[in-house]
Image (cartoon, rainbow, N blue to C red; front, side):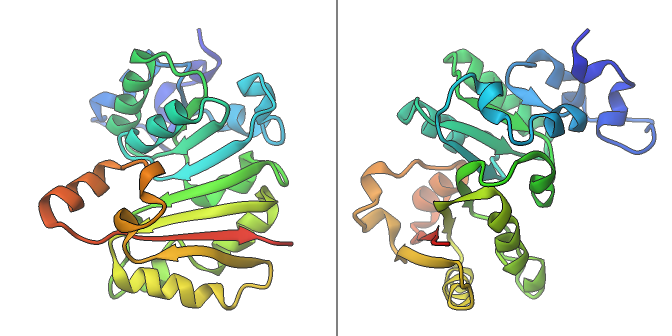
Length: 232
């Protein structure tokens, strides 16, 4: 039996048993090489993710990976980069793993974990970058946004100097607010930004997310993009 499922399976995800479970919860077991959900195992790799991937390639983290299009696209385009993709929804994790196995990817891992728990399983200066694509803008409750000062406190711990936060959003106000927030950051600087990613010099190498495809094809909405580098 896999180390991930030795204890009561439901207890990996809930504090107490439930009468009904998402059917995709059980199906995570189908892809043990692509999905990690046991917190103890995750935490055991803190500072040692290169051992997990079996190489010394740079490691990037994505928060909110959806159905995996971005993670898979990045891993195909950059095979010498390791990608840890964080997602909470069972079906999305399963879909991502199924797509990855179909093309036999070796440099991606999907993790079921909350983004704010990253310092619990990622070591000091262990990652080279973080991707946050189309997070909830929390209109009217902006204090709930992921890109705020506490995120940079996390990056202070886990991101290498010279590493970057990559941010994409369709929400114009969120984009402007992150640019304003960056002015308060002593250890970081904006090294690139555009309010029209798909008509910029970065468009050629841009990997689309599922959400991005929807906004481009259905709404023809401009996509905002920012790169913030850790300078000290």
